[in-house]
Length: 259
Image 1 (cartoon, helix red, strand yellow):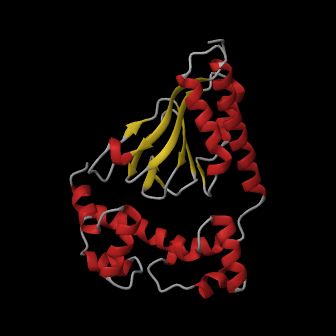
Image 2 (cartoon, one colour; image 1 turned 60 degrees about the vertical axis):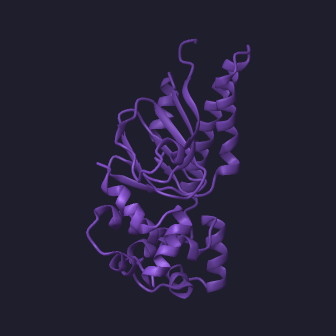
């Protein structure tokens, strides 16, 4: 490797169902290289230090050396671990946000696949392709960060309202009024910006809140359901199983055995 050329330390797919079967939470670990993850499915919550990031399909997470990470499962993601070995690239990475909310699968997946294929190859062009994959990914994330900063989401007030009032009875009319939009226009804009309906997004917010309460292992399931905005324990269980493939009771049992 020439001086200042980025080096891939690992690339592939992480699937918690295979790596951590039957568990609800990964152990805390220290990050040694830069890590970029592209989530392949909605599911759990990924933590960098004490900051929580919902795992949603197409979202991107960036961790830096020295960070401490763990996740509430399930998590399925494409990952790329690398050392930039270049001051300009280090500076660019230090200025990037840790989390990109949205569905960027079509935009970014080709870079992850190219990096993995180049890492597994021994032909003469593999080194060039590895460097190109990393550089293209970082430059695209930098462009994406600037575009997000310059064009804030119109539906952001509704999202904040959901996150602060998920335990209340909410409907499209209430959420649309947060953005000063008609219900029809709000629904269309929300789907465009968040790549899911307002109802689906609200359900994910409620389920993430429920997972946090279940991990505390204090409140009865019926109370968790009501606190998180579900009309009944039965409906809560149905939504939880549909999203995570397990019941709230089973998730709580698994969480009790994790540190």
